[in-house]
Length: 487
Ligand code: NAD
Image (tube, rainbow, N blue to C red; front, side, top):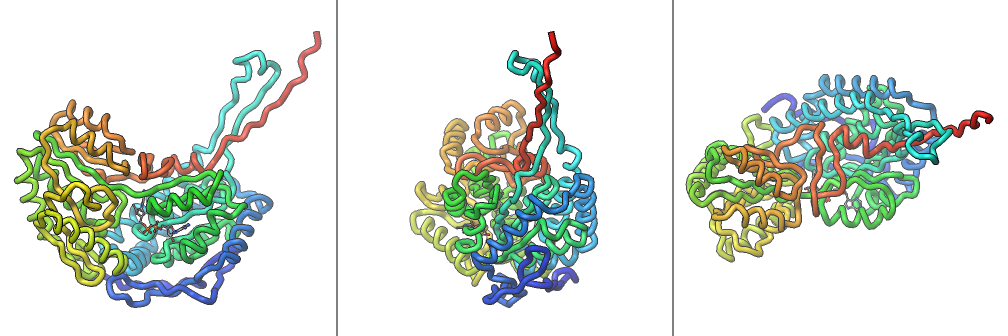
């Protein structure tokens, strides 16, 4: 067991707003999904708490001290450096309250360092332009420009599966853009969010511009989304929740990062071993609890046997075990209900003819990495987001039919295409209706600076640091009507 895996951290309070840590009654226990043990306790905020938090942040943004761009840049650079210093503690927290084995939790912390650093660097891009008033007669005697201004108060809502980096992806771009942020982290993983808040305060982010209000989605989340002083909602979570959030937000600006069902296309000239290894990595990391998780693999019929064999061999090598053990590849699902749901979807498919090649076994919150073929049309495993460690492999004879099938899915986040032919790669990539296509890798790849989001049920708008900063700022024009020269 590594040292960081056992680290704990106790926040100075269970919530934070108006520059102070708060405690509430009742409170929320945070449980380790592996064994149900209490890892910590945070506030279970009320609707009234959300109102206080939002009003405090709104006041700071509208009438508080100005926070110049150079200070934002410096504070976020310091935050990135502090995250490096505290990486063991953060990795321990991410792993204990979440589902990630410690090795993966350490990777998430590294990603978050990048996210915060990239956000600091965006300070240089908060620039406007002069406006081309001379282009039309109406603009005669006018002179003006626009600058990029904060939207105001960003209400941020995050899921449990990347407790640190997804928080960083909302909070850091919002702050560098000059906004205030009220964050509602997932009820399963609020401790990492509170630790990140403490880090921001230590880095010099003004305490009145940030608030964290842990609590339940239907209460705290809905109150935040509907609050009249929240100018923009940045949400990451499931499609059903996203739909409820959009309805409640009404005419507010929203950014929605929702689910996926990870298609991969393996063309006849692909490197099978490379494709199989990437499928195993992409399907079972974080026990499949990843919006980019590989869920459906379409393989050219002539490669199917070889691909299935290697995927199964590699899957059987995975170590399912305790998150604290550095050898563990696959940890638990977030709770019993999630593991039971995946089990029931697999059982239904098997009852209707699916063939199990690996896994299909549950023990408490653990669900074993599962490889299926012959999953019947109509199975939920094919059309919905599994969000668990299950991959279905389907041989195909026609590339056109596969493209039609993938484009007919309700989600369209990212996809992968394996081939050794550039023309085929580009042909399929251009025809797939998804947010990104990775060639010779699965869709489970992202750098934190790229535009991130999808089509259809996968979301609205794009995150990724520079794109989030754009979304969280707006052009504001200042124009001067000059007195025309006499005569
Ligand atoms: P979830 O939708 O259950 O919850 C997400 C957040 O929304 C939580 O903080 C929750 O408390 C809150 N919430 C719940 N009901 C709410 C309501 N009525 N109003 C406001 N907030 C509410 O999702 P989850 O189970 O935590 O995470 C899994 C989902 O997130 C998956 O669908 C996954 O694909 C998606 N996800 C998407 C991305 C992406 O970037 N596209 C990244 C990670 C996860």
